[in-house]
Amino acid sequence: MNLSSFCRSLPKMELHAHLNGSLSADTLKKLYKMENPNSENCENVVMNADNLSSLNECFKVFDIAHSLTVTPQAIFHSTYNTVKEFQEDNVIYLELRSTPRAVQGKMTKHEYIEAIIEAFEVCKTDFPSITAKLLLSINRKQGYNAAQENIELAIHFSKKYPQYVVGLDLSGDPMTGGTFLELLKKARTAGLKIAAHCAEISNETETMDILEFKPDRLGHCTCIHPTLQGSEELFSMLLKSKIPVELCLTSNVQCKTVPTYESHHFKYLHEAGHPVCLATDDKGVFHTSLSREYEIVSSTFGLGYEELVKLCLASVQYAFATPEEKQVLLSKIENFNRKMCDNVN
Image (cartoon, rainbow, N blue to C red; front, side, top):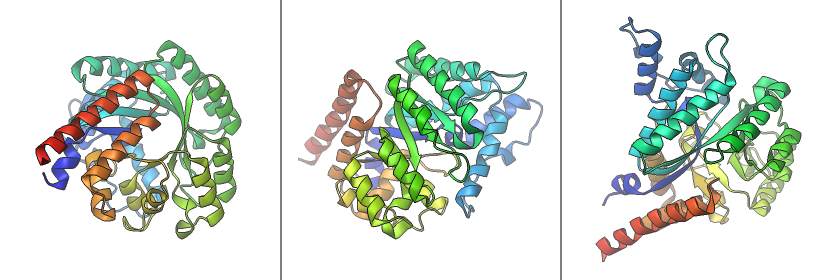
């Protein structure tokens, strides 16, 4: 079996995927048709990150998705199609993250979240091979009051739908807003898991604050290693923390926060034995898939099939799933590995 086929058939864990950024070209076109049933021109709605030159430009690409996800119906279809596409890529566990949105006259934040949950319920029947969870996001750019409101929503919905709403995500443009760590402490006390985007830009003070807070997982951690605008002190602090890092190689390279795949900090974290998991970040924006990310890591850093399986198995431990769910996920990956070994022998 060649590398591409192996990565495709490998049962995978996706722990860092933003809903709006994960919308495929097909999904965007469908949403556009829903909003504009009499229009034939829907080609221009496709997001394109091929020529981006900065992290700031990456965030602007999301405007297209946001303009088309303004009703509960659109949110339902966005979620359903995204879960379906991840399942088609042989992803067996998916944590989607999204910032609740209210659109005047069309949708409340409660309706936004309920639409995602409703899609999860339907997907549970239609696509039983994938388990889907939701992390509600705090967008730095929206400020303190919005962060406080979204945390209250996360606490409320985690009690109402504990099987789906499992955590909080601190995200948004790192060049604006704050970290709201005091609010995240409240969420942690209420039993929610915390994933925090960290060090997407060089900001040593904020990075240290987040590392000292010790979220359950960290996103990106691009500017921590000394070769990537970080420092030995920051890198040592990260390694000592043992906090799993969600790594999104294509996203980092296309946003220019990492110059090349070969220089990606996966190399340093993997060599140090630090817990990591591979993720897509925004598969629609960056035209990637989780299978593709595994293929890139293997071909760039020389990881064999056995090491790729180990990455998948380790990712199970970092998921915000129940112990019972983790056991099922581990069994699926281990069964795949046994079959592969039997075929080789």
